[in-house]
Length: 136
Image (tube, rainbow, N blue to C red):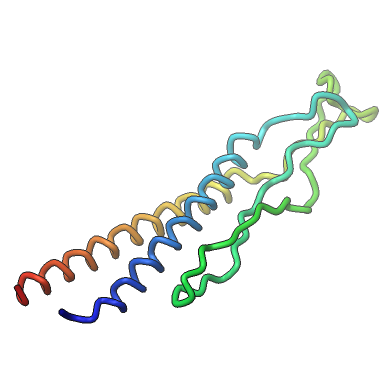
């Protein structure tokens, strides 16, 4: 029987990658969904952009990816809208620090990486099956 540990390590790495990419997709999707939300009152804080951060994964040690969500500390956007109940005394409403164009580009990149990850796993599975068929 051939040694399949390198193939197992590769599929484990791909699985960890998909978990990380799923976390990034969730954070980016939430950012896009809240890009135009406003606080309920003038003193309320607007939605702060979320960033999914993960520690490097040691596949050989079999450790799962560990991630956390951090808030982007960049300045909030401001829009002049004195009729809005969330406007301050000068008539400005503080809006989330989310740039929808950048979030959309990030989302496309992460989804493409996720798809490539799946494609690589299918290729590994195909090679594994072909090898077993040759040996069997």
